[in-house]
Image 1 (cartoon, rainbow, N blue to C red):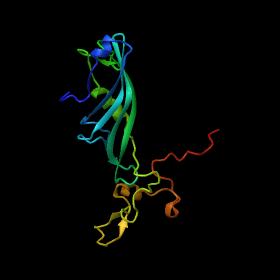
Image 2: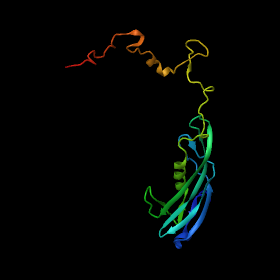
Image 3: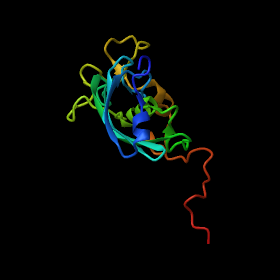
Image 4: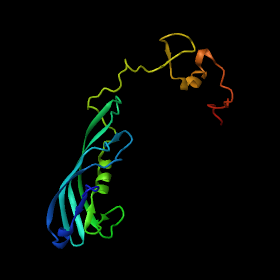
Length: 191
C-alpha cells in the first residue's frame, strides 16, 4: 500500500479463522535510534512472517531485519551491523495498551510493532569487533597541555583536579600538627 508499506489487509484471514497467510513487507521507518546507535531513516527494513486469524484476533509472527549504524563503545569509531528480531504479536479491534495492537477496518499496521521491536533489539553498547583494544593512546594521549607555563609539549593532569592537588594532608611533608577543625579527642579512649 503506497505510503504504508507495512499495512496488511487481513479480511480473508478474518473470514476463514485458522487460515495462515505468508506475508513479506519492505520499507523504511525513520526515527529508530538509541543514544549512539540508529537505523538509517532510508534503510530498508524487512519483515517475513505469517498472519493468522483466531476468532476476532489476528496473530502475527515472523522475523524483522534492519541495518544499523553506530559508534564503537571502546574506540568510538563508526561501526555497523544488522538487527534481527523475532516477533509474535496480537492485533484486535479493542487493543489493550501495552499488550495488543489495533485492528482497524480489517487491516493491521506492522509499523508500530517493527519500530518498537527493532529499537529494543539495537545493541546498547556496540563494538566494532570483539577484540577492539579501545582508543589509540599514541593518537589520543591523556593529559592537558599547560599553555600557561609556556612549555611546549609538556602536559599536566586534568585541570578539574587542581583543587585536590592543592590539598595538604596531615603527614605530608613531615607535618605533625593535626588538621585544623578536627576534634583532637578522636582516637582517644574515653573511659
